[in-house]
Image 1 (cartoon, rainbow, N blue to C red):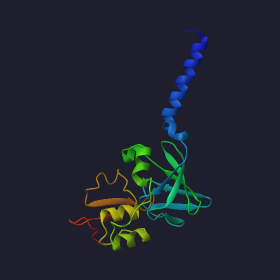
Image 2: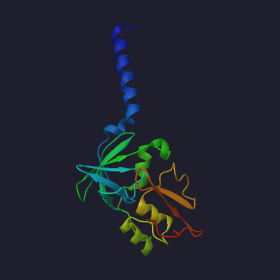
Image 3: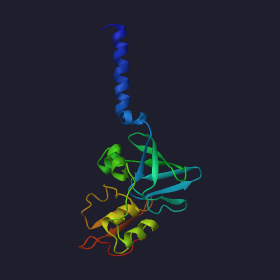
Image 4: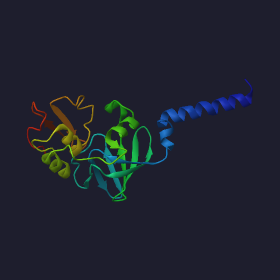
Length: 191
């Protein structure tokens, strides 16, 4: 192989490796504006705001909720995180992600928790809407209401949405369990 061909081959292999490592062209994709299907729980510390696939429904001081139906713009993404801007507050949030624990790639997860069009609350009960507003699981809420209030449950702790018990992380060290009755309604308030 000529030296020029070897150098070209090296750069081509390096470029392909870079795309595979970073999650592909999505790291360079244009920003996209979408709407949140579920509340996003985040923690503001100083100038940074972080959220996670693990939801961290009550991480302590600095806890904030980006409400269901919020218009957000995804600014950057790679295989381990995405950064979005809440269009209402203009705050930027870094959302950490773990594909292995969720069993899907980041683009699939983003499509799962967002909608290209505004979300509707017409199919949700009054108790669902109350829980969503508070960011809590309240007695009598539906599964859809709980997802909207607390976020999509982390698959490594809740492998099936058909389970009668969903586990949510409140912070990096503590979890809570949301129990559903045989009608699919929350058995008791969970704080």
